[in-house]
Length: 245
Image 1: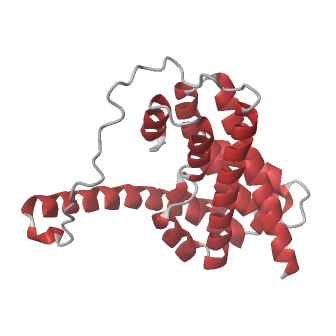
Image 2 (image 1 turned 60 degrees about the vertical axis):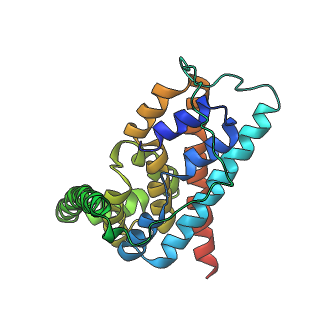
C-alpha cells in the first residue's frame, strides 16, 4: 500500500499506464530490504528466483497494458482525477548538486537518521514478532498432513490454491517470510510458496482496497488478473525449474 500515493502522482502527472502498471505489480514483491530478509529467512536460491519472477511479472504487466492501450483501452484510469498543475516541478539538470555523505556531522541529519531507524525497527519488529507467533501456532496446531494434501508437492492444485489463500491470509512482505518458511518446513511445495508470496504482495485485501479506491474498475480488474496470473505462472515455472536440477 505504500506505493499508492506515488502511483497516484504518476498517473495524475500523465505517466502512461503501462510503466505504472509494471512498477505497481513489481514494487510490492521485492526490494533490497526484502531481498536480504528473504535470503536469510528462506534461502538465497528462493530469493533469486523470486527476484526474477518479480521482474518477469512487471514486464508482463507492462507489455499487456501496452497491447491493450493500442486497441483503445484505458484512456481514463483514475477515479475523480484531480487537476495537477504543480505535479511537474522544474528541475535544472545543470545545477550543481551537493551530496552530504557524512550525515553524522549534521545534527539535524543525525536526528532524522535515528528517528527513521526507530520507526523502521518498530515496524519490522512488530510484524516479525507477530509472524513468528503465527508460525509457532501453525506448527503446533495445524496438522502437517493437511498442508501436504492441500499445497504439497503431490497436490495438482497446490499452485492455484496458494494464490487464492494468499489473498486473505497475506499480512505484508516482512511477515510473510517466516510464515512461508514454516509452510515449506511443513511440506508446502516450493512452487506453491513462490505463488503465495508473490500473489499475496499484489492481491492481498489491504492492497486490493487501496487500488480499488484509486482507479476505475476496469484497471482494478486488470491489476488483479495480472497479479494472480503472473504469480501462478511464477509458481509453475519455479516448480518446473527445480525439477530440472
